[in-house]
Length: 482
Image 1 (cartoon, rainbow, N blue to C red):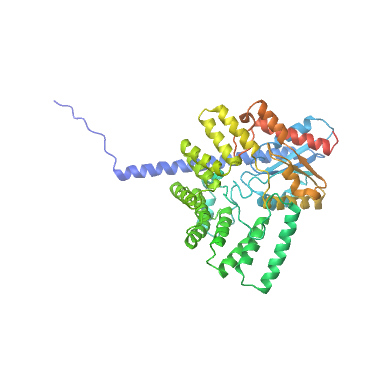
Image 2: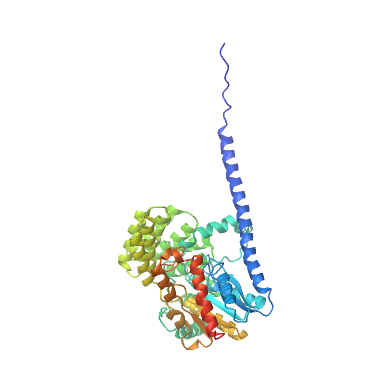
């Protein structure tokens, strides 16, 4: 008699789909919970460290401002080193660095920090994210659905994952300000104030001049006065809705605020009005990247290169796209093409160094790391200049000391040039010689985790300790004569 073997019941297709969807849902729930718990732990640790620093009465309080190169990086080492020197004063270091931010956002929070902590000194190392790789500031939205989406940690994580692609390939070309970062910062301030006054007077006489509104909007945007900039851009477009360049300005404005749907519409309108605008396709590509539509990113960047085959920045970002997808040979091809048009690009040298390192070509990688360092950015953005001056005036009114720290590997001279004849009372910390010396003796990777800015990156613990030692040495010598 044959044994009757029953087959396991077949799971219906719809039930399989349901199980997959439930699995995905459960995965995202667990990920969200994990991110919230880890985020709460990290913030509580930072707050706890700040509280520990402040619990001692009669201490000399130092407030640290900056981006991801500050938050949880050198401040704990700085407090430790200062107190180990035993000069008879207790030091408390408050870490108010915020990853992914830029100087307009930092400046918007400074007054509250000063009121809360009443520091004796402020240490600032900032500017690397100004119109560069930073987490875009999001203005409050009236949309309930959008606010709900933004409340998820997964959403914020997704934005952080694309952080290094967020650098704009080109700053807005201010029609009324031809001066570059090499110009005197004080002259820039004077020119800008004169331009603002002149444009306002001109608009009183001719309130229908769209170009004047666009130019005034650029003045406000450079200062980080974003609501005023938006108002001017929109007024100019209301008067002349066929200005493709204006749509570019407004598109980048929305992109900076994380308002991607509005930015996309602006860039698409710029393409519609001027199909030969490589910058419109470039901007559209960045929006698609932020939305995770990588095929559209590739199409837009390639179209931008077709229209303007000499733009080294487009080569860089298209190469970066391929590099993030593991297509190293294609990435290397585009990085090298970019260098052919701009042989002094620190970003391109740094990107190629990372490729050589990933493929085991250590000596070649070090060669390109050195070239990236030699070609490091030397000039500050106008926005950074303005906000450093604003910070100085804030602290001057409160009679607080300002310490300006240059990023590792970079020359101190551009930072000093920001203030020129208006540097009274400012303490400068140079990190170029010490870092270059240590890197040459050992290796780049011993002091940096990455090379996100071409000539330097986020520090390892060893790098952060060196950075903190440099700051501590200058503070003790300049302020306490030790």
